[in-house]
Length: 128
Image (cartoon, rainbow, N blue to C red):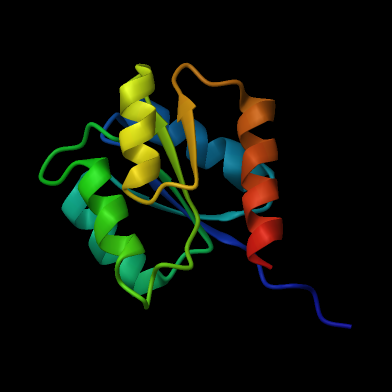
């Protein structure tokens, strides 16, 4: 029996240290990781690579995470991709906006690695 295809995760963060940490953490769990450092690159990579899940920062250059989420969620070709916002914006209002714009989940920085991995596994399981 063939091995299941490796799940692909797009990590979008303009802080290289955070992107590197997430990449190492996800690769250690067996995920294929793609990264983008700004909102415009995130859209291009999401459309080109069709990832299984997106970890999306809110405060990004060129196009913020809210706009990226909204553009993907309102495009029927990409609306199926689960989005977990991973951000330093901790106000309840920010979380509400993120979820309204199409995020499936909202995690604040600093984040608990085990909890984030559990959310990723849960979203990927729901996706199928």
